Length: 185
Image (tube, rainbow, N blue to C red; front, side, top):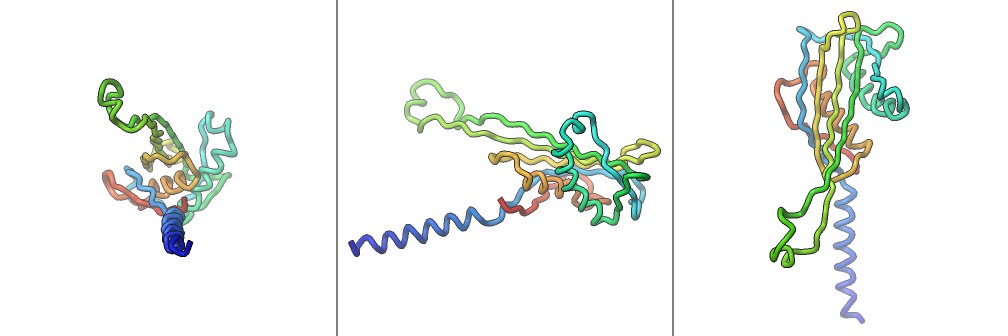
């Protein structure tokens, strides 16, 4: 029985190492494209959220996502003003899922030599943040962030993507870029 003890300790240490790796931080990397049309970003702008009719049907859910964007605007010096805003902000989220097949072609002789058929679900997500001038209705800021992974939707991923979309706000870098944001899984 003493001969098994070192193996048990080794397995316990290995299991602890694997589990501690799972509890570590995850980086959500999004592909971001953002454009601003203002010559110089407005300082201390006043804003409020604007919702599409489909977003008004689920106010609690939309409020949760908007709550992820509000601190990013406030960090840039913008102030929320429900009564007399100079800018309107829209937050749009989209997610789709599809099954990935483990290999092309599942028929014939080769299929019998491969491991059992296993499907995985791939998730593609997109967030869009639009800011328009209230008086003219003109869109002055547009940001898109895309991310795909094998993990189902979560608030942590949505928050990371919205943070990535607002990277550099109010003067975003030009062109497409990869932006990684650390989250706790």
